Image 1 (cartoon, rainbow, N blue to C red):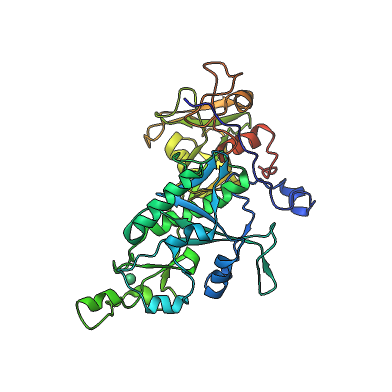
Image 2: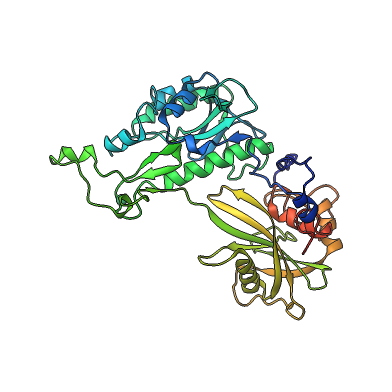
Length: 412
Ligand SMILES: [Zn+2]
């Protein structure tokens, strides 16, 4: 077990100081780790290659690099950023010099374009201005994995960066970054992962092209590489090219995660998987299925995994989770009287699920929190309940329950 790093603070919700009708009625908004990005994504500017090109070429433009989806870091608590001149040998003079329309028209499947994602503008920092209104330091993410035509240039860059004391973070989860950095990383990782998983069209099976600052993929109607074999560069018809849906969009998979409260409000249901450390329990969770409301998914998952029947379900807060593409929808659900007997037989996912008193959970939140591969805090006594750290939404849900539903769930 590794020694845990100090946990970062969670992001601030938007306008926390503003007293509003909504916060009086429903409590303060809770922002979870991986949300709270300081970047304005200006999504409507992504099709504008003049904007992307100007942002990329601005001296303040900042690049977050990934190799095999591992982010460049300075230390476990700081991402490593580089300038355009560092990645120029990989990206070339200007990957946004051509309009999207022409890129699709001139598509050549034999030509490798390293992925470059436009993440947004950091409005806290002055410098770049576009059409008067859109200001801030531009952020991009670039895939510098040595492959295809950039193998040599990428290998050279990786060596050079390592010479500067930067490394590509090997850990699967990066939960030690300050919250705002974590949110930038989450956006970049999610988009790169989606692009890398979708090199081919889901409808016709032909290669696709990343457009829109990395937020869409297009199935071009022709491919210049085909002219090596015949006169005609056109590809077979593809249903994705008709109507307005001639593109594919990044996917986000909704997941429900829920604190389950007993009908008398005095106990909390937690479960554990076999591979988790001893005494480590968490809230139940599962995927939202097609044509299911969030409330129904919560009730179904809880019944399938624990046999408990839930009544009222309220949504507490949500958390982006870029491993690889989840949105965790955090909820609190209350068992119906008589529906509280634990039965693990339906779905063999959990090794155990049981009711804990709120005092026991409160104590675990104080002394027994840790990531899965880490040891608990110094005050923890062997045999006591252990739970996830505050960077996990599960911790926020448990905290809300033991604190009398403060934090968005006052009307449970
Ligand atoms: Zn297609």
